[in-house]
Length: 250
Image (cartoon, rainbow, N blue to C red; front, side, top):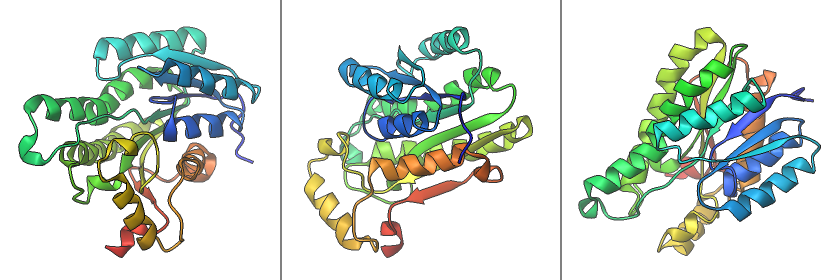
């Protein structure tokens, strides 16, 4: 249906959660996948096995996307292995969960480097492998536009990420590269387990979601698949919210 067979995708933070779901979804549609990870090697290897079971190639690359030299080296490996890149999903994320007045400059810079600036590095190094055009997708969250307890640094970095996507969309559009954001609602992944009020967040989200269930990683992956397809050829510089309607309830 989507005619993506033989294309190549890079998923940062692709070993778990939303990144893993996107990687597997693309693999099931014939896409060779580069899974970037930094710490969870066993999870990355498990993801690679599932991808390869789809009959496509999987390349595991351990890279800290906050370090420019690591990103450059990663794309050298991708270039040698595949020679081309069609899709790039900036999904790797991190940050400190603290009230605003307890944040240090180090906390702030860490969140910005991983969650926002990394996309700039990825785009700068990756477009050279997108000579025939391509798709860049950033994964954001509702914290980019809403105040969430203890989410100050991460939320601000996600807002910066969404702004960067719009600017990249203008610059890269003439090269045939679509750049968009997927903003996910409350998704019960390993990352959410770090929130001290996780259960409260999930309960509130469920009670306010018109569709009556929480967002799953696979829901986000479905939209990523759509954005990689020709059906999304004229979607550019947008933030697509996947939350079952939660965000419209205030």
